[in-house]
Amino acid sequence: MDRQPSSSPSSTPSSINHLDTHFLHILFDHNSPHLQRQNIIKHASTEQMKEFLELVYNMIHGNISVTKKQITQLRKHKRTINILVNDRVVIERKQKILANSYHLLLLFLSILGPWVHEHVFESLMDTA
Image (cartoon, rainbow, N blue to C red; front, side):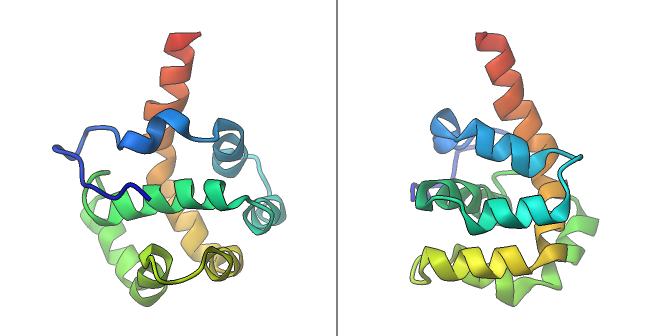
């Protein structure tokens, strides 16, 4: 994974250009039921998981803005998040953890959703 922090917190991580937008659209869709999201995570490719986990990594390291209230909520899941951003843990284990961590997944989606919508889906609208 390309994990070099960007120069400013509001800048777009370098991987944003090659994100699987269909995967993200279904994952971040507000109308998607939990079982559909869980199924998407379980059957995601290695690249799709790496892309999503890179967004989590960038959020944790301050490249995507997070409010103090959200930081407090994330601290409750500190051990799980450390596993998710650890390069030594295999993707399959991360997939299983994320698929079974309903509240953590919803927290990630609520934090990353507006950012993904602004930086991914809006940029796709501009290029179309």
